[in-house]
Length: 186
Image (tube, rainbow, N blue to C red; front, side):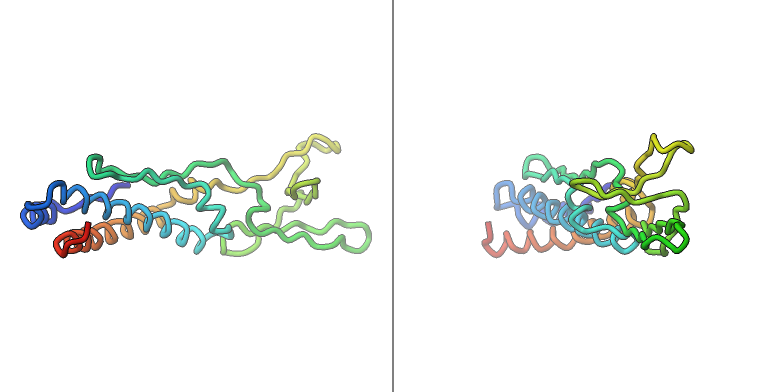
């Protein structure tokens, strides 16, 4: 994903800001940094529209590299591993009559709960997890995981929305920063 300033916009800004040393670079870097912040916020919002995940969980996986007047490159990077199913929504009812076990239900996306017939919830000292047996024996068991935040960001719906939001912000903010510098702002 990449967003760019229009060549005509840059040309116009160079003409208008010719009397200010490094004016175009300052205006562009400020606009780019605003666009990067807006894209992170848009990513969090759009992911939360589709997935049952906390905003802080999504935001914590993202790092921002800011632009400077001499280096007009900025980036938002998301990195992280697959998350435990307990980071989403898990329903585990009380045991049913006759010693039968209740079915664990998980909602990763906001489309509804899905039953996990062979899963069970384990409460450990510091956390809770959803597990499943790998054989018919009691052990070994494996922890069930959901998608990682970078996977959620990679969907077409999310990435196209984030890109359009960043481009829109970049265009508006560049015009604003040029006007600000013309009116005497630093």
